[in-house]
Image (tube, rainbow, N blue to C red; front, side, top):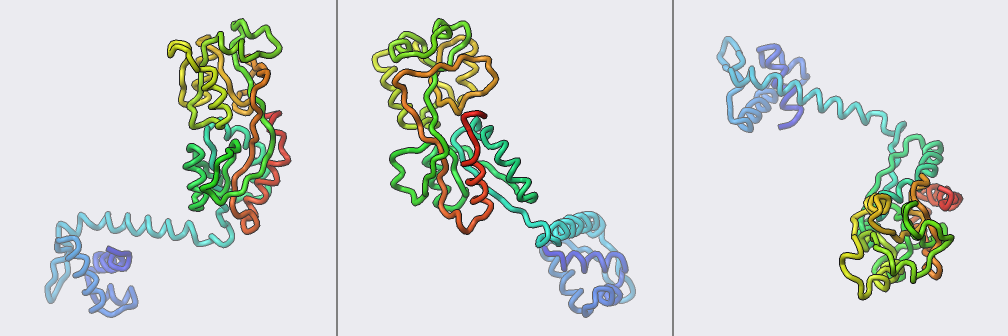
Length: 295
């Protein structure tokens, strides 16, 4: 079924005459007849009663009339949407990250980027880093924002650091640790731990957490699927957590403490071709100008 067939059907239905329908469409009468027959064959019904003197819609033709009009209206609306595409070009930028929390660090950058490119359409993919790197190689995303990993040999992506992010201990104001200025590994070993899904964390943090968990009972720790879930349990007093400072909300309800001897993470961008993508180039430029530690 195509729009030409539908236009022929409507022209015949409105004129109840094949010759006048052909004249209206500026085609030959046999062409109209062919389109109607092919449409009837596709639908498996007769749309018109035809005789040498008259043409009438069948019951099936009457039922199909509104469908044909609706289909053509949708088709016309879709065509009009893109008539001025050259003047209102949509500029997509596909950004990958490992957690939704990371998206909050992009608000100011995306606001400034929109001022430069009013037709910008950001799209986001939240997946583990290996999946994002594969998507970057396949050009399903333009850029990944996340923590640097040492083993990225399977990708051709470039990495550019934005900032260094320290590890912090997160606890509720009621926690015994809340009165400290910083915590030690010994302090952490004496607390119940609320831990984030390892696939969303830098490898260095996973190793640090594994050392803390070594020899401990399963009753001493909780695993959550996202940083938001971690912070909910911490605030509810289930234990303390360890997260890169960039993944913490600035609302002040929780205590953030430096970890003595804790790792520091490189946070930045993975990308492939920046030179041929001016939107991506500006995005990277703006992000490198932003002090993410103050967000």
